[in-house]
Image (cartoon, rainbow, N blue to C red; front, side, top):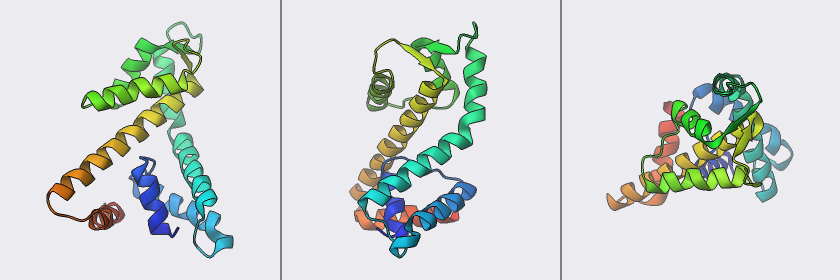
Length: 169
């Protein structure tokens, strides 16, 4: 995959962050990973690229997330239950807009809390937030594509418009 194609893939999965600084560092990641393959990524390298982008986003947001987590960790046990986690998601702007997004949050909670304890340490909380944010971005991207197609745009045109918008935003 080329840079443009890899960008579209991670965008469709809700991984692509929006700031110019993030886009610049993501481009550097792509260049580093694709250096030995002529500026293109095969499937395995694209997966590696997506993982590297996720890690970079997680590291960027870690201190802010930790502050939020610690503010809700009243007993300083380092663990929060589901209710405070839901409050934190709202505080971080991860509010569901519809039933599909509500179900996505429940699904993400189930995936992250695979033992079913209803307890989240900071690392689990951070994974949960990242999964919810990515799922919301992916769902909303899909909604944008569907709406644009009802207006007569082709999917390839929509992707090009989105890419150009993101590059100049």
